[in-house]
Image 1 (cartoon, one colour):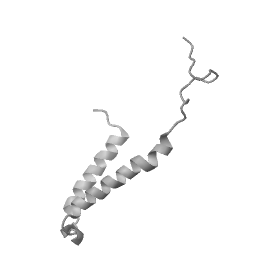
Image 2 (cartoon, one colour; image 1 turned 180 degrees about the vertical axis):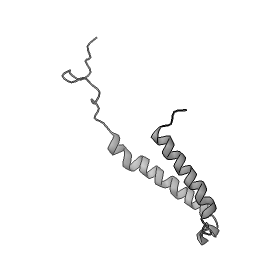
Image 3 (cartoon, rainbow, N blue to C red; image 1 turned 60 degrees about the vertical axis):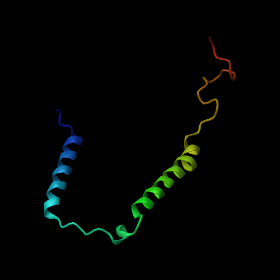
Image 4 (cartoon, rainbow, N blue to C red; image 1 turned 30 degrees about the vertical axis):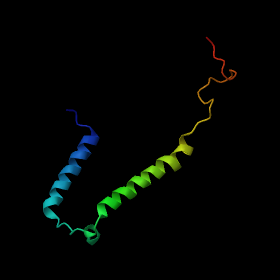
Length: 81
C-alpha cells in the first residue's frame, strides 16, 4: 500500500479521533432528541430539502441549449455521414 499525503492525513485524523475519545468528556444528548417523532420529522424535512434542491435549484444550473452538442458550423439536423 502506497502512502500518499491523503492517506497520511486520514490516518492522523483517525488517531486524533481515537485519542480524543479517551481524553474528552462527551456532552449529553440534546433535550430536543426526547421529543416524539423528532428523528422522523428531521428525516422528512431533509428529504423535502433534497427534493427542493433537485427540482428547483439544480435544473437551471445544468440545462443546456438543445443544439449544445451539435458541431459548430453545421445546419441543424444535418450531420455529415
